Length: 296
Image (tube, rainbow, N blue to C red; front, side, top):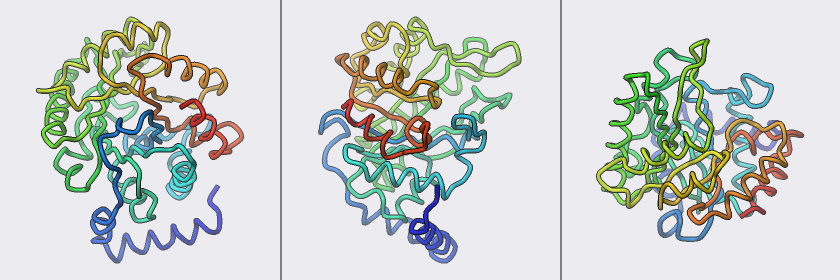
């Protein structure tokens, strides 16, 4: 997808990375921030781009789609430039690339925190915090942090992840920053792969667990998939929640319909979507983003 215009910007980014590492902090310091907490202006559309750091590069039929950084950054920049897009979620490398590209002024920026549970690893449930910390998020002038919480009752590593997420929620809240928790009940299939249990009952349990993390829930948001019995799932907590996109769907229209129905529920506050919008069927990022924005 990389165009000639973006190729020149990307080449400049690479040179800046090598020659002027201090430019990252400079770009963060001059970034124009939004006023107020993320929910102050109504419903949100956030672009998710934190998959590569966990080794999850697949989008659709391409197992390495997100492994081309120039292509990924151009897609994110196209999405961020569309009307109705409020911000981005990413790991430090992606966020700093976008800062150096000047793409984050006026946007909500959420830092992804625990990427240690690498996709397909034997230790996947032990989701250690290997990226942003609460203090680093505050120092960079970001608006909050996101963490993944997969609860596997048969895996003792779940306890460590629960504890780490609780500390992160507390640390972000102490700084007045949003903690976005993405909870699942998880299990391993016959081949040993971690699978999220995407049923209404499982998500009610996951939401209930996530809502109670940390010393306060005042700044906690939830990031929830669209499943059956969404009314029950969203009724499990009073916390604001955004809907996630997940894998690129085989039927985009059905995915949109699911989002639209769930957005009518009281605690729903928007969408946080990555591959579904960045790698849509037909490869028209702008059109996919515009369709999602119309739902809000």
